[in-house]
Amino acid sequence: MPETPLAAETEGRALGGPLAFTYGSWFTWTAVGVGFPVLTFFLLGAAPFLAQGAYEAFPLFAATHVATLGWGTMTIMGAAAQMAPALIGARVRGEHLLPWQYGVFTGGVAALVAGFAGGRLAVVIGGAVAVNLGAWVFIVLMVLTAASAARRARVLAPHLPLALACFALVLVWGTILAADLRWGLWPGLLLGHRGLVVHLTLGLGGWFGLTVVGVFYRLVPLIHGARVQSARRGWAVLGAAGVALGGALAGALGGVGWAARLAALGAALALLLFAWEVLHVLRHRRGRAPDLNVAHWHAVVAYSLLLAASGLLWAVRGIPPAQSGRFGEAVVTVFLLGWVTQAIIGQLYKVTPFLMWYYRATIPDVLAIPRQPAPYNPPLGRLVLWLSNAGVLILLAGIWWGSPVLAEFGAAALAGASLTLAYMLAYRWIPPAAAGALVFEWRWRVS
Figure 1: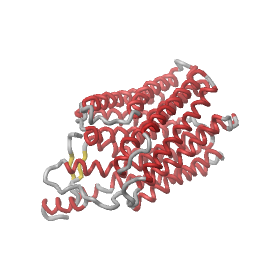
Figure 2: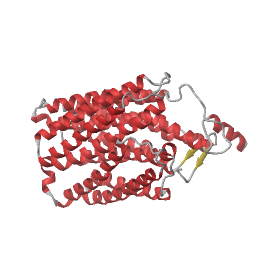
Figure 3: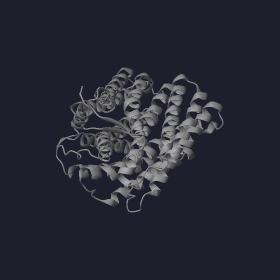
Figure 4: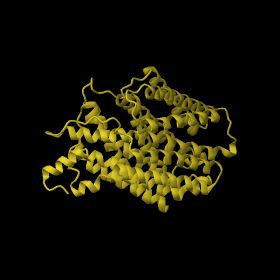
């Protein structure tokens, strides 16, 4: 324990402090420290349902919504709230609303998940209303923030505004589905899983897929000091993704078989082009020190190739009709727990330290941001990398072969990865901060 405040400040600087927390940090902290571990807890209970092909079971709905809202969306919200002042040079508009938005959205997610877990659809609807309210406040604040930035500073990949539009659509559609499950207002939406397919298309492909691609184009070349090989390829990825989204929606709502196959081809093309660009940037990065961000993006490339092969197989009708449900489960699992999750974890190693040092650098009279040769390769991170990918592959085997035991082993590996990641990024700083060895500063403003 340092004997004087000056000694505490000196030690805090040695540990990388002062550690500055804002309301934007709470979104990311909740996603990493609560959302991801809770997701894997629910996944342990839902794994047998996955293996048995019961993908419309309520426990599985609970796990899916923790993954999409508590893990993925909370991470995106935190990154967006914090990165706006750092990257586009604009204060977060209406940031005094962020504490209320955080509380309403988090409470809505908790209620929605609890409702699904308990089979209480009235609670699900109440949670969905709160999620919508919190999410729409976030959408409005982000649009106003981007619009307020100077035109020359407003550098956003075109994928990101479209992803935000898909997020708005999926919010409305999710509320409609919840109401339909409760009161049976539109029975046609439940026939042939049409409503569910539309929800997954807008949420996974539109919101998460386009966000990951947009974040890659906006941030990864910047942090690695490499240029993308072709700006046109980014537009081609966007065009192919648009074909995939439109075809999937037409196939689900209109029952058009060829549109669904066209969607699979579009998705495969988008994934292949995206993987090509990622590999180019990683090959030409400026530094050669070990970097977990690079390792996780290589995992994203591997999942991109696997998903592209799945899309091609679906397009040529290479999946027997009897296996189509199990095939769809496998694709959603690989996309959400593999492709999206690996992209999130990889960026956390870059964005989280960057933001902590960014806010530290805005505090007067502190040391300059340090230059370390390999600050993004913590030993426990390798364990997260291997456990998370092994968990997805074992879970995938359990789904495909209908083995609840394999599925549970995969979920357990993912649980180990989530708890290790939570310790590293969400909890490890708390004991030294509580003991005064790390200077901690709560900042009420994000920007």
